[in-house]
Amino acid sequence: MKAIKNIGLAIFLTGLTIFTLLPVVGTYNLSPETFSQFIEQKGIKSEQFISDMEQNVVGLRFEGMLQLSPVIVKNLEIANANHRKNKEYKKVIYTKPHDMAAELGKKAGSGFIVKNKGFMWFLTFGLGSIGALMFILPNVLLLGKKGIKNDGIYLQDSTNKGWIAWLVFIFLVGFYLVLYFRSEYAVNWTYLVDPISESLSGNPAGHWFVYGFMYCVVMTVMAIRMYIKYRHNIYQIVRTTSVLFFQIVFAFLIPEIMVRLQMPYYDFKNAFPLDYDFFFQWNLKSLLNSGGIGIFILFWGVILTLVIVPVMVYFFGKRWYCSWVCGCGGLAETLGDPYRQHSDKSLFAWKVERWLIHGVLLFAIVMTGMTLYSFFSETGTVLGIKTQQVQNTYSLAIGSIFAGVIGTGFYPIFGNRVWCRFGCPLAAYLGFVQRFKSRFRITTNGGQCISCGNCSTYCEQGIDVRAYAQKGENIVRSSCVGCGICSAVCPRGVLKLENGPEAGRINPTQVLLGNDVDLMDLVNKN
Image 1 (cartoon, rainbow, N blue to C red):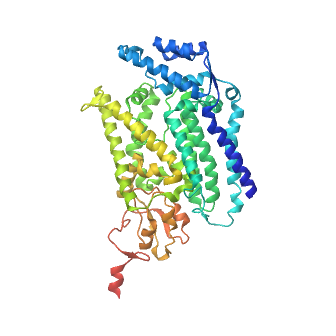
Image 2: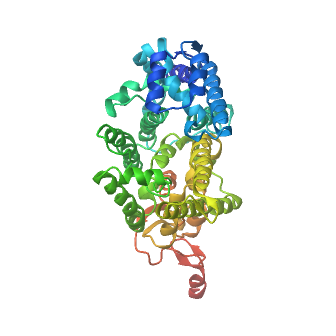
Image 3: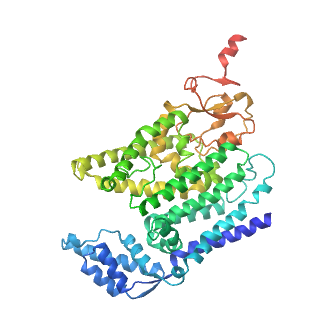
């Protein structure tokens, strides 16, 4: 079995290596006909840009995006600078330079990769998936009898911040940097999934389709690992199945099919303020111009945020969303599961968490208020502050860097819930309701606790669960996402996730021993 695992690892690394090299290889040749069609479709009126492109790019052969991208970016920046200098604002091209390089690069692609999309898909996604499954599946036999095996987790370089973990960290951060800031280097990746994208939406794949497809593939493969590792825990099996279903069906398939049916692209499970641009002017106008379906989406988004979310949290806690529905949580619970022990349990981390996550929530609320005011008053500023600038700042700092680059890229070093714990504004909103008005709680039986510390070690949200368990105190914390791993790894059955009555759920002033026996009562009886 170990031989199969080693072969699988080699196959996986082969697929991953090919995938990693694709951004810097390939051949690009933009034909005059293709360029003319592109100019017409985009409505570009800049004669200088067109002339520079025809002289420096069109009809020429480029080996790799490293050669092509700088030329396109330079042509666009020079043209726009001259137009602004001459106050020719109608000729300014507002597409970002690197996005322009990605669009033209997509049309200019030629050579082996473009002509062999299916084969290249097999060499990357195919080999990666097959190799990973060959590495994972033998664990059915190797893990042996019942029980969740975390043996040696602090002795492995892959799960204890060793050199393997740092390589994973570098890959994930690099991937997200390309995805958010240098999309032209993802062009070759888009060719691999063009057939899938065209079958769903009718359009060629963009870099966000690559991300969505890769998200689903990674979650599926790592969900199989979850099924094996937690195969004797029904709660974990059902929870993993739920997040996998909502990611593949609601976040990936339905929005793509909606585009094919001439409807707005929309993820029906994505609630504000996690869906921070829902109330942006461009989105509101798009929905209002989309007829009945657009009005329905607008209505659904408001009801989901103001009614469904708090009601569900009252009955089931924030776990109904963060651990059963959310795509961010789904990736954290599958791909991020090997790193959950790295969450910081210190008091300092808890203080940073409270200020940071609530600060992001406040930022989102203020930004949305400015956005709605600007939309209805038809003005671009609020108290002298440009609404667009605030939106751009949030999109860059929170939407891209925090949620993407840090939120996922930092899994191997800081744990799998960095974004959910420190940055997600929806998690902060859900946490308010859970902490003060929810039936959800984790009950503890202190008399059975042996202080092994498994619960605290594997709490991805940095909660010192053992401290509650030792006192027999119910756990009701804003940050708890109800993943249930603390209960799953407890060897004594001390912890239980419940949706019980609110009465008696918090005991902040009592010192408890055993099964909820108050110390003073014990003294008085004696």
